[in-house]
Image 1: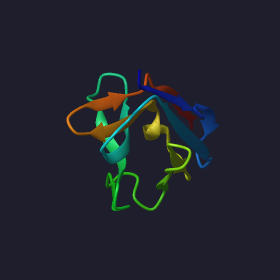
Image 2: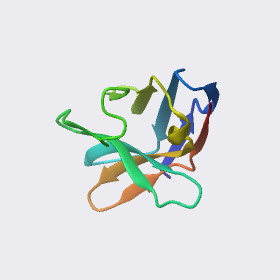
Image 3: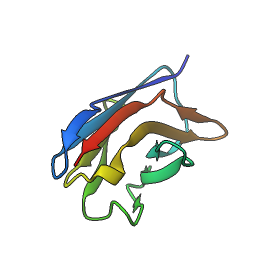
Image 4: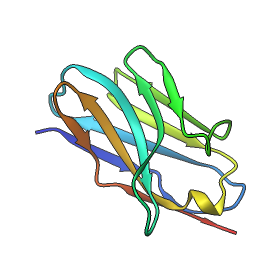
Length: 115
């Protein structure tokens, strides 16, 4: 059974940094991309950052230059380094592994940025 477990969330002051990790367990085949999404209260879930199997990265405009996605294929882990955090980054952050034909999701980790 595939499981994605996020960690690294918490409370941080504006301007601070956090590093999220997502460890995958189980047999996952044909991974095409790994990504981080977030959902703030009252808002839809949105893409934050994504990295393909070819290491092509995509970022939401709101986090470009502040967040960095990376992966360690040997550990089957994806990371999100978040710097210069802002109160508007407050959300539950979800890890996603995109495969053919299934998408896997973690349960989320809460990031709260205080002003």
